[in-house]
Length: 328
Image 1 (spheres, rainbow, N blue to C red):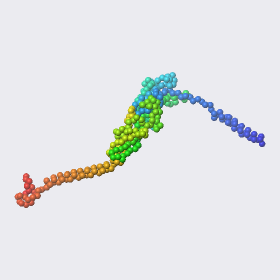
Image 2: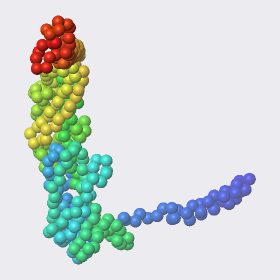
Image 3: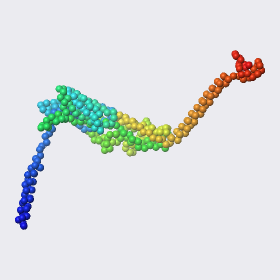
Image 4: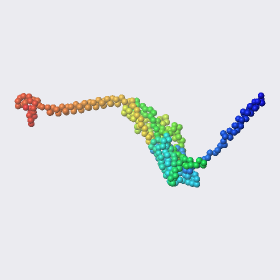
């Protein structure tokens, strides 16, 4: 019995082991070192590729350097070529395309944004003086050689954001308004940047605005015990309160935000004012109407024939004597 089991095992197990030994070299291949890609043309920013943070409306200078990075001319600047720089917004939409001359290999340009957005500047193509286009396509697969490589520059153009927190309209002619003031684009946790990357040389940028001047309808607002909350008492006599918030800071473009809401205390007085005004208008129109009628009736009476006793016939006549004011 034992002999039979040994024979059965040798018939089943031994072929399985042999098959496994044959397949093992196929499934387990030696690791092949990945070839480092090479690039003929490289266009990179001359400043670190960290995000830059500034205010809307401010110009920022962006600099790049174009170099040959493969072959005999490796490390040599690419002069007088044309580089296409693509500009994308925070939604990855292409909003602009710049054609820039590399001049001596080092080139720069100024750019600004009138709206708050995060823009990315990416060189996507270079055309040399002989008309050759260098793009990020693969030129030589065996040597992992590509035609073009570049790095992007990211710039934050930010602004202030003011939102209405609360208001008190229980007092006639007065309104207490509270607003929340922050930076629009900064995340709640803030943003850490290199010192050179901010206008104020501040390395950590919090969401909360500090040292800002806030006005509400021209009245300077005071910051409360709660950071970012500013309040002011303003005079308003209209039934609808129109609120204008201005936020400014040194080196930043002033932002303007508007709100409106019903003024509870002012509404009743304006209802009486409207009723009185309507009555006054009606009275004036009636006086004007009757005065006009009186003038018209006076004119008609002058045209009517005269009735009276005639001096000639002693009878009642209605025909006036020509050239006289008497009736015959």
